[in-house]
Image (cartoon, rainbow, N blue to C red; front, side, top):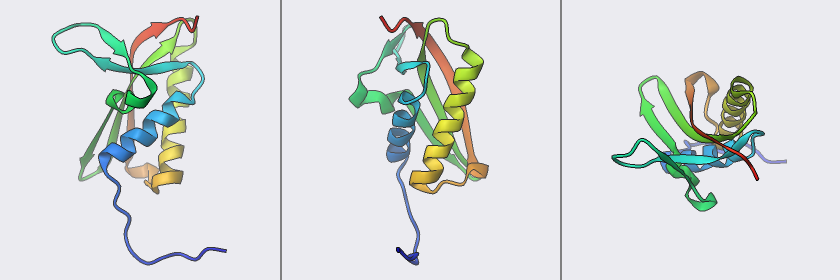
Length: 117
């Protein structure tokens, strides 16, 4: 059995974004992460290895804010997918990075809808 080790854990925002992106992709109804194209009103669906570009992590005195820019599947309930997505990302960050959910705010931005076909 493992024992606690004294010290602190420091995790970069990029690592948190990567973890959040993978957690988001495992959620029902999420087709992919989205990236806003500069100077355009459109978004592009990101490839799997670039998904953290669809996640913005900011640190404040009050904790972390994770903004997820996603493309969801056509025909799914947006509210249900958003709630499930926020819950899954919060749980994953708590389990893997030991981030206290009381100091974590997750904002879901649905940037597009796409059919899985």
